[in-house]
Image (cartoon, rainbow, N blue to C red; front, side, top):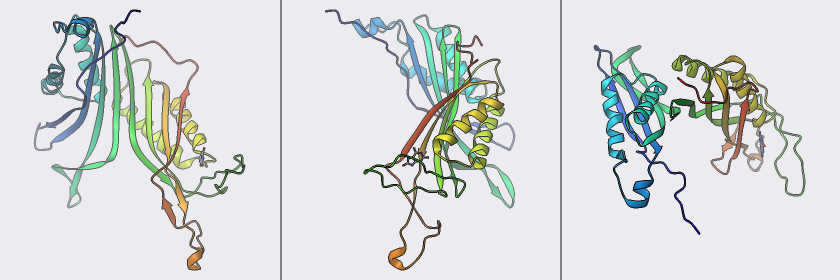
Length: 290
Ligand SMILES: O=c1[nH]c(=O)c2[nH]c(=O)[nH]c2[nH]1
């Protein structure tokens, strides 16, 4: 029997980075959580404790902060590409890097109807995300968002599902549909304008959620993904994860009241979890030599 070292990677997880752009009196801020993960010829440290090829995770963290100072962070995809390429190009033992970035949104506080120069409020729980993988001179960019919470108070039905002795869910032709969208999409083709692409994909998903008369969250998922692929040629595929944030009608009959689809109990758990990928058949599969 032989025992061998399998795939391995290492890095600094969840480096919290906040930058303040102080060019003039109107400041802007970026609030990121950055994770680095490196692969390569790292057998020596695993097998013999020889660290001569190990870029310390502390060094990786320092590089994140130093790069944020050396030039503006900009779009998270650009920052992740700079970091990933640096690790692969700079260190002989490192052949691959994966950089994950979550961006936490801040909005300017409005004072007397005007956006304030240097005071901000946190914009909910929603995050913009990217995962950049560098493998030699090939690059993959998978961007997305998490915790985009949406709700429609009508325009959603759910019926026609099989009924047996375990089925208690009533059929409905008018329900509240709510979810917290997690989406990840893989880019293909020439480098897009990352910010515009993100804003458009987000808009397309929101508009489809709002306007589709839904017969299931599965149908909504596919329609949202399909709309993104139809309008955005830079997206090769999109994955969606949609928890069904159930809103159950409260039985008001004990109080002699009728519930006309107006009073709900917003259940926390368990929740249905609807997940799927929407693809185009001519997607470019390989990493991009950007
Ligand atoms: O949109 C839905 N899809 C389901 O698969 C499902 N299952 C369920 O209990 N409610 C719902 N709603």
